[in-house]
Image (cartoon, rainbow, N blue to C red):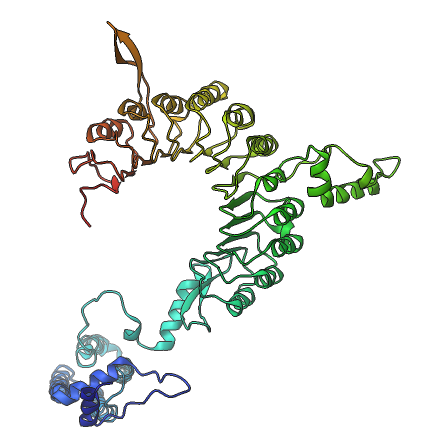
Amino acid sequence: MDAYDRARGSASGSSRPRRQAGGNTIKGPHSALTDYLQEIGVSEHFRERRQREAEERERQAREQEAAAANVNTGPNATMAAATSAQTADGALAADLQGEEDRAADVGTSSSTRRARTRSQARAAASTTQVTLVAEPEQESEAVAVAVSAEQNEPQAVKAKPKAKRGRKKKNDSEDEADYKEGLNRSSARKGGRMKECELCGKRFLQHKSSVTLYDCTKINRAGIQRIAEECAQVQSLDLEYCGRLDNSGLMTLGSHLRNMTSLRLDGAFLVKDQGWAELFRQHGPRLTSFKVRFTGFGIDATRALVIHCPNLVELRISECVDFDDDCLALLSVPITDYEEEKQEYERVVRLLADRNKKGKHSVAVQPKDYSGPIPGWKPLSSLVKLDLAYPYKPMTSQTTARMIRTLGSQLSVLDLSGFKDIDDSVVLGALDEHGQKLEELYLSECMGISPEAMCEFFARQRKKAKVPGMGYRRVGLKRCYMLTDSVIRELVLHSGATLKWLDLNSVDDNLSSLGLRALEGAMYRRETVDGKETHVLAEQTSGCVNLEELDLSWVRCTTDSVLEDILKRCKKLERISVYGCPEVTAFAPRRPGLKYIGRGCDSL
């Protein structure tokens, strides 16, 4: 508070409470406004206005009394006059009481004054509801008097209705308790309740089934403990940028969240393999979705996941520092003695113990005497979505092919983005044989795969399709620099009817405008005429009629005319990314619902 505010407060005579050491004194913002209005004389103006309104209401009451006396003649005239007099006295008493209350409540909040005015209006209205008992022959006259009183009385009691305003702010509510209760009622329809966080003081909606925190950089061990205690019934937990989460915090979450089936943690780099392994031993069978990114997650954590999480449906291990080729091998069936002895010993012991109990072997088999693959065992048999994008360490083609042969036939989503060391054998071998159920395929930055292998792969998948026109819904080929026009043509022929999302970011080295026009169904082929190479339209297909999002960033052959041809067929396109495409200008085709992202001619 500056010197001007202190001087203004002393001049108005208001005693404003100071901030105490134990907390903040809550006072409505209208108290300061009332003091200021008194200082400049506005309050005196409104006081005179209210007095004039009271005199006007008294005059109307007298006129009503005289009118009732003239209309009613007979035994009920005295009763009507008494009723009118009582009405006038009640209105005058209410005005006098209102003046006394307003004089006593100078500096109170506007919400309290409005609540008191409404209560006085209801009390005044209740005094006018007098039952008139009429004789049978004068019943019509009595009813006429009652109707007249009902029509005229609200003018003396009710104030002029206010114009509708926009959304109410918190401080404009009638009462703070009513406001909080209203929030609780509205949030109950959303499946939660408004609560106040004791750590930061903010109010939040507590959902019953899921908790998502998008920035957990300042949540320490005490905050993790509060999350575990307050959200013990949640089924899905999503914590992003949780850099302060360590092994003990992870154990706290696992011990309290007994109903949790989905867990996503980004940036938990303090959690070590021992913490992940202990979480999976305690909580693994209940997990159906597990996603981690920017953490360690080495071989011990992967082994525990494979052994103790048999019901996983969705798995993402993306950009993890310790996830290497040996960890990837754990996701497939072991085929060597080295893998069984060093990486799979715990699982072999458990399986052999179960078989010995069931009496499947005449002689008990010991782990040291066992070698070879485990018959009838398959890791992660319920897995449908697998995301292993952008590993920090190289992945070999042999291990990747083994993993696809083990899990590929059951997957609908596979993300191998960043597997820079895999070659054509992965695509033409394991992926071609076991990838018939895939709906989403991401091969971004897989620069070891040749364009010829990619063309052959899409052509084989088109021939193997059980239903013509069935293909992928989402395909990511970002930074596959060697892709050619023929790859795009084969992709459209295979998945043109189903493709909704396509990423061709930075595919610029060998791609031309003819390859992009394949998206609208124009298939060109090269022919040599008189020693000159030309392009001839070989086939016209329906193109990508269901395409909704397209990323052509840094594909410099993208022009306004190319986009115009694409939009003629792709009428569902809603978003086109064109970063680094200088030939896309302000004259690019437009239509309702279409949005360009990254166009150079657009201004902020």
